[in-house]
Every structure is written in C-alpha cells, then in structure tokens.
Length: 485
Picture (spheres, rainbow, N blue to C red):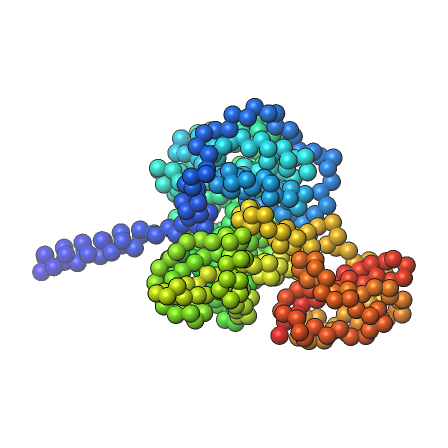
C-alpha cells in the first residue's frame, strides 16, 4: 500500500511538471527569419560604407493621413529592396532585426548600417526605427527577455545600448518584438519593462518613439490595456491565424467568419484582444497586414482541407502571378480571403495568401475604427509590383481624403454597401461635370453620365470602389462604395 501511495504521488507530481512545460509557438517574424534569413544573397559582412547618415528631414511634410509602418527585414534589404520602396508612402521604416543577447548587448542586422535606406527615408520625412528582437539567440527568447525584466542592471545596460544605437545611426525610435515569451512573463513584468523603456527614451532622447509588436490573439498572460498604455503605439501583428503546423489549410489573416467565437481580424480589433484600446485609444494601434501567405500540400482541393505537409511561406510578388497560372484566386466570402489550388500529378497544393482586395478590406477596417494607422510584414515581399503601393496611396495618400463638404453635404450615395445598384441623390441640385468610378488600384472602371441617377455595379466583383464626383465649379468629392453580394 505504501508503495502504491508513493507511486501515486510521483505520477501526480510528474503530471504537474509536464503540464507546466508550456509549448511556445514561434511567431511569423521568427519563422520567416529562419526560412528566408539564411539565403545566399544575404550579406555576411558589415557594411563598410562610411557615408554620413543624415537626420530626419523635419521640413519634409508627410502627406499620409495615417501612420504606415513598414518592416524591412535584412534579407529583403540585401535583395535590392531600396529600388522598390516608395518612401513617401511610409511614415515609418522599421529595420529588422537587432538581436538582444543575454548580456544585454544588441547585435545589428546583416549589412548594417543601411545608409542608403536610412538617408532615402529621412530625406522623404520617413522615420527610421530599429526593431529589437529576443529570438534567434543561443539562450532562448524567454530567458533573454526574463533576464531583462528582472535584472535591473541588465535592463539599464540594454536601455543604454538602445540609446547609443539610436544616437549613432540617427534613428528615430525603437520597436520591441519580443514574441517568444511564456504566458507567465507576458503580463505585468513586460508592461513595467516597456513603460520604463518609454520613459527612459523620452527623457534621454526627446522626440524619439517606442513601440511594441503585439499578438493578434491573447493566448494567455497578455495584459493588453496596460501594454498599450506603456508605449507610444502598438503594432498589432494581424496575421498567423493559421500557420505552418496547423492540421487544416486556411487564411493567414481572415477578416471575418460566420462564427463569432472564431478568431479573425475584425474580432481581434473590435470585440476581442484589442477591444478596449480600439474603443478608447484607437490612435495608439497600428493594424499590420501580411504581404505573405502559406503553402501546404493537402488531401483534397476543398477549402480548409486536411494538410499533409507544409511547403513554406510565400511572398506577394510570387503568388500574384502564380495564382493566374493555376486558374486564379478563389474568393472565400466567409473569411473575405483569397486562395488557390492545383494538383501536381501526385499531390494537391493550396496557397492561402492576401491580395490587394483582402488587404484593402483590412485597411478599411483600420479606417472605420479610426486606428492610428496600418503596417505590413514585410516590405519588398511585393518586389517591384505596384498594386500594394497604389493601394496605400489610394487609402492614405495625399488625395485619399478628397471629399469637399459642399459635395458630401449635397450628394448622397445609397445603399452602401450594395449588391447591385447605387442611387445618386442630388439634394443640392448641384450641376455635375464628371462622375467616374475607380477600383482600389486607382484604375478607371467607367465614366458615368453626370445626369444619371443610378449606377449599375451588378457585373463588378465584390470589393471597395471609389466614386469621384466633380461639379462645374471644379469642386471634387470621393465616395467609397462597398460592393458585396
């Protein structure tokens, strides 16, 4: 009997130990560093360019109506990203990644300093931010972060190292990307650490910024309201809802779902993880969207099929053309998300990835909820393609808010959203000179007779369209119209 009791106690204690061993899921940033960051074209040596790094051009007016926060990983910087970046359409360029070690030292990204990119950004009035990560080191992400949280001496060394790097390279702030934290370390300790860092940077380097990359879903431990309050703004990593190891294929960043309890971006922002800051401090949230997708082998060609193998991450510049090769995108209206599939003769393949329509809808969510801005992981994943830059310009560029009160106050467009027809109600009896419909890429869809009272959209695909109206006096206005069956 005694031996049985001893065995029972041993088994119970062992079960508690096993339950306490929390499995930490790697985030998209870390996984893609492992996947893309060891490519042969990545620089192995530090940049020896001694050209002077210029400061932010405070006199260059940024015409964006919201923040646009773009992450630039070192493997894209080394792949000629500079020639593809439209700095005037970025408010922030986040250089990824600066790896913090257990001794609080900070390793710089491959090829650093990126003088060409920093100077081009600063000349355009775009802020350049260092993104500090805690993953990829030999000591483990959680161990490194916990040491900084609990060891005041190490914390102060880290703060001083951040300050030194900002000063040395004329940077404009720091972004913290601590993803590999156990749930026990995601709460008050993290928030206290971030608040101390923000106070330190604001005191030592007035005008410099501190931000944090937050999870799309609170899987446990995060005290989101306090975290948002501890920084200047928080980047919501609104992706990785379905990842490499999932048993079923699906959207990386679903906007919607018919089941309210499912996890999707709208829920994340409005009723889930970020509901409180969205309601009370929306200007502190940046909604970051994926310029990447996921590729699996699957058992069938059906949506959300069982996966048999994970192939890898994809990039917009490749999937936008590959999709056409395999019959084009399939639009999943439940998720508001595109995907495509094919058979190679032996296996079914599925790629779920954002395109300009699905990204446009997420941008519209940020606009509707009055968030501080949008972001993207990662810059140059679109290569030299223009679609996503054109979309940013359409939504947040100099002409994005073109809607004169004289037009808006006298012209009504309804119903909106619509499934087919919209009616123009001219309450002010304005004499219109031009009415034209554009898609999200700024391409003209049709010119409309200014005397028309209705517009037929039934033949158009679902998505956002822009109705530009101009009266005979040259006053212009733009109406956003959502076409949805």
